[in-house]
Length: 456
Length: 177
Image (cartoon, rainbow over all chains, first blue to last red; front, side, top):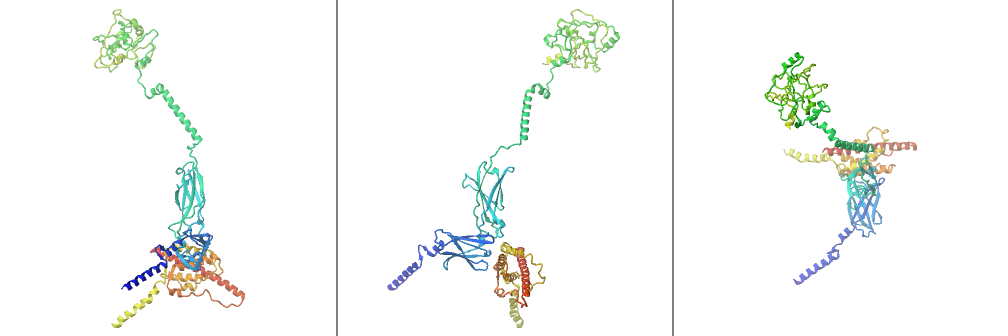
């Protein structure tokens, strides 16, 4: 038993040693390491030189000793089975027309005649387009944008025609802050408002085969960069004519405002918001200007009694009779002062009455008045004819009463004809004015000038 | 009764087995989505037809025996393309330009690459383009050669057109399905 066990142990030990020598090391597989060392990658470029295509391969590990290593491609070739790569420094390449472009090929790393590692590849799936060129940027002042254009050789190619382009731009001071725009055409518009003013920009383009196309692959190399400067933003330069018009209109408006403010009180407001005329001034305008010696005052304190002398007879009786028929009987119920100076009465008078009766006009016109109101008494008083509506024995309203003989008053109806004769005046008592009181009739409302003061 | 069952067992199934290959296609076609044809083959076909624009006016109207024998029938498109592509190969290196030969190769080999045909189809050898005829003198030989060349180009043009038509038929059928 012991001998048997020992024999088995030795056999197992020998097996382990043998397997170790064969390369099955615990540190790693040599064969796997060799495969990793010889990994490579390739890309193709179609119609790079007329109708010739190129295929470029390189080892992923730059430290690999590729002195005795060759690459060979087999399959998907026209009229031949395999092609050998040419070598330029550490890069392997082929330039040929004999790619079928249909189906897979096999690329092998060969050490002499022995293939170390092989990789299946499809030439049309590892296409790397040529880099775009002639990138230019044009500023359009009217549109406030930048038009970016570039060219690519694939526009004239038969196979790889559809590409996706990547336009990248950045401000030169902003490193690594690239903005990207994808497009399928060769023209791009950048808005000025999306760029900084008065800044230097760098722009470049690269391409890749369209993903939905038969051909696929990698990004091309970047095109040469193009540098451009964005303009300064000026305040919108206005047309000179427009500028002149706007300035002149501004000044016109300012002038209008100033004039409006200055003339507001004197000219504009009375038109826009007319005020009620002052009755004193209106009356002064309507009435005759008194004579120089006439001292007219509407101050109620200056109102004095005016003596009225009764006139006994009038020469022209016919007219008088007519007048008397129209006259109203005097109303002596209330004693009030009667004024010849006008219808304005003192503040003590009631607002409804006017006091002159036709009878007072009998006799001579000159009337005696107190000295203070002499000028007022010289004036003739023209009563208005009795209104047919006033069938009552109410006093008349005399308005606008202070008139000179030469004054015509269109408002007042023509007075009863003053007699060419003489009004005889029979003074009842010198210095004793007749005061006729005319009380306000309840039926009629009279507004006299004095009532303004009372209302005030 | 025994004779009837015997007939059904041993008669009909062999008949089916014999007829099945006739009805089925001999060749499977890859790339029926049209990507290979539109991106690669059609480019070479158009290039060939463009370079043969002048040819056709002098061509005879009689159909070649090849086209009488091989048609792009339903379920036979693959076989026709196989035969046509192999025929196309024979026109290479007939004093054509490099580009012309290149495109001929692209069409023929590209088509063959997309076809997976049964061995019996592959086994048939296409007849040679023409048989040598005895000539009497040099001038007659020369004119015959030119005539042959002209006939060959006419046939080639017709062949390329047939290939294009057959491919379009295949892709149309694929899109309809």
